[in-house]
Image: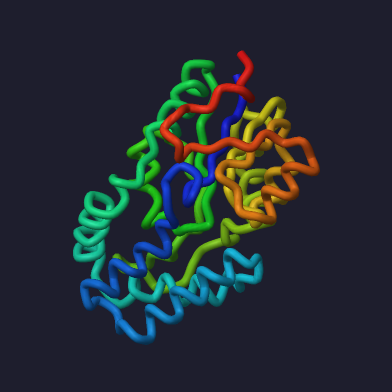
Length: 228
């Protein structure tokens, strides 16, 4: 039994849920189109370039949570998951998760995207353990701020290490699947790093390091790297 960790956006789903949620808010007139669309695209580009200021981004992305009551937010989120996310679920990802589950591995998603957004998405894959950036919730409302360490780059390592202290799991024979060079700190930490439909920087690093490179987009569950 091992710990099998998965990134979410562009790994288990075929797009970026954080970016798409922003577009969902724009399309429904919940946020100002011109301002929000520009900023959302810029932050996403910064993320892909590896230059994202995570604190600045979180203050931007969590602001709509503070501006609307939770009941309304949950309705929008349910609609978003149904209309936008479900078509992006990947059958090969489900098969890969099932392989780890059948081995008795402990399954986890670790994502920079906030918990409000990712919790119902991760539940669609039947994964119980989620480490994500946590929006602050005080007196029945989101504040627009966040609690603790943002779950991004080195922050993913820190939050995982904190989680391991309170669990019976270890990183012995652990796995981590990710598409992004932003996840290199955690990919370097596990025993079995796997690049999934990787961006250019991660692809280059994975090739140099002889890491497996797989695709979950082609309709075929990859098996060549997987050993019982």
